[in-house]
Amino acid sequence: MNHTILAISLSSIANSMHQSLQALLGDGFALTATEMLIQGLSLIVFLVILCFYLGWMERRVAAFMQIRLGPNRVGPQGTLQIIADTIKLLLKEGLTPNSSDKFLFNLAPMIMVITSFLVVAPLAFSKDFQLWDINIGILYVSAVSSISVIGILMAGWSSNNKYSLLGAMRSGAQLVSYELSIGLSLISIVILTGSLQMSDIINSQSNGWWLFKGHIPVIISFVIFIIASTAEINRAPFDLAEAEQELTAGFHTEYSGMKFAMFLLSEYINLFIASAIAATIFLGGWMPLHLGNFEAFNHVMDFIPGFVWFMGKTMFIIFIIMWFRWTFPRLRVDQLLNLEWKYLLPISMINTIFITIIAIYGWHF
Image 1: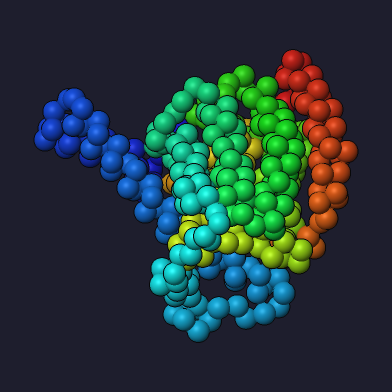
Image 2: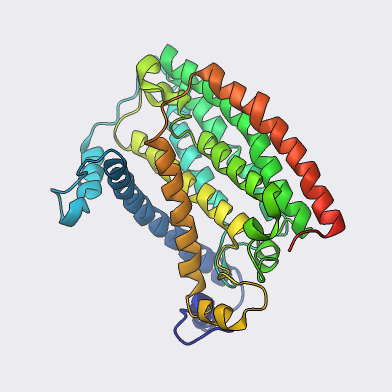
């Protein structure tokens, strides 16, 4: 791929930092530990700032969908409203019920946030710029993201609250169910590329994104992935684990202050992760839009930095998921499970067979 001087080379910045630290600390444990610390802190800062933006974006999208103004008082266009909300949560007292299992009650929000941070590791933000290019990237994402259900179950059970327990049980059934459709949607692209590695999947889309190359079966996989991911991250209209009308606030009813904020933080991080995975698997990740052998068009697309492509695609999918939230009413729990077991899962299984046939005969573009 041709790159221009207009493109911001994140990998070159990382390499220069590595060389500087290597000259200062030498090769060894000190260098590795320092680099891991810098990467971890950078990731935390990036995700926290991103969650601030997503909190503001959520309100603006909601206002747009419902023909309202949205936040417009605190800061320009309400941009500082999320800062005010954060200060409010910091100042609120973090209560722990007397009859709760205090150790598990305090551990649950930490598990949720840590799990969300871990899933970010194999995501490629730009060319040669990712924390961990593991050869089983898709499998790693699927496995680690499943741990979040343990945090929800732990929060619900340890609260010693019937509403929290019901919400946690619902969430367990919901997440275990919808992970099947998510897994089959991801497997469809693994079948076409023959690799579980994120970088290999992105490179396979250098002449076109799989959403366009894979015909109708891949479009079906993409739609199912978006629907199932919305359920997986407990967002409306699938947020049965925290349905206010019958469960008060579900599994986090007893949480307040920063403990509640950690659940909120993990939800927005998971929203970003689900959208980033969809952008990577189906829309080429940081790869520019290339159309076959149209060299002039492809060359123009190469002027846009890879990081801009990645974040643009991810934000587009986040907007779609937010659009879902403010368009459809919340489902009942039986409707939620029927949608998965009677419709999405059978469609995914049949669709996977069609994609396998396409891959065997090479019918994709």
